[in-house]
Length: 352
Ligand SMILES: NC(=O)c1ccc[n+]([C@@H]2O[C@H](COP(=O)([O-])OP(=O)(O)OC[C@H]3O[C@@H](n4cnc5c(N)ncnc54)[C@H](O)[C@@H]3O)[C@@H](O)[C@H]2O)c1
Figure (cartoon, rainbow, N blue to C red):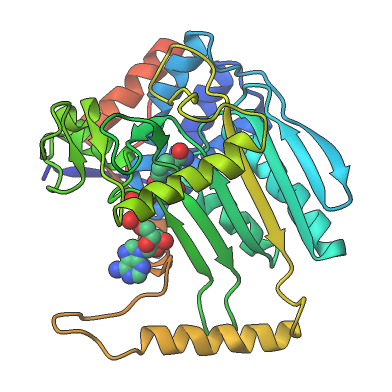
């Protein structure tokens, strides 16, 4: 395991904003992208943090991601809207979609927003957390570039497209935040292992010959393995139905990935906000969340298990630690990000 260097989250945020602004992104959109990436690093989802910046900037330079695009929103019904990201960053488009959905839900109980012509939006949980902060339950779906075979197939077709949802917690409980790729592991974890010179566990991916591999470079040439066999493959197809087919964006293997310079991403997202007190009062909802949380985390433990966590809880504990102690990166990652700073003539990443 490589030695890590700690960076304060404020410094990581400032660094990303300055790289993006120097690349033509507006200050407000740069702030939203930085927030999504730094939140991922804070929560320990290092596969979707600020290390993604060099690949995003490469896409801007290649002219396949529009740094200056501003997402627009069109109301379809009082509870349904469509966001067009105009081939800009996925982060501000998804954030606009969620703020539109929560606004609709606060009046009508539910808000559903589809996003088209978007790009990668990183860790889905940060959009779920936007809803939690507004006191709302949510569904956050996206499609993504081909990485996973359909059950029975052997080549990349579906995306490793995360399924995310959330609900505010009670008085004594944490919010429920589920954010999971339909594969055994997210593909970003393979990129992270490659960056850090680490092996990947067996059972995550097959190489291009269809053999199990622990080598991240070989895994990236092959396919990711769906979680739960045909069930994971079906969930990946579900993400494509709701995010791709329905939105008017690319689907059925047509999305271009965040490391691919061949064309616009044309990613689709599907975002729903739901008011938690539609059927019981808010007070009762909170009490019921407290009961659920307690029952889950105090459940009888299996042999060898020290603690049972609520979905999203491990990430929240990591965030509490990293807010205090900083975010760990390896030197190679810092060097790759500083190379971008040098190209754009902005200050290098400040380390603690
Ligand atoms: N934007 C994209 O195209 C894209 C594509 C793939 C993945 N991703 C992101 O990659 C990230 C990682 O995905 P993943 O599937 O590898 O996540 P993961 O396997 O680390 O976690 C999945 C879920 O399980 C919960 N969990 C994990 N361990 C737990 C435990 N011991 N007890 C209780 N709950 C536990 C987590 O809180 C989380 O909600 C996600 O944030 C996802 O949004 C993004």
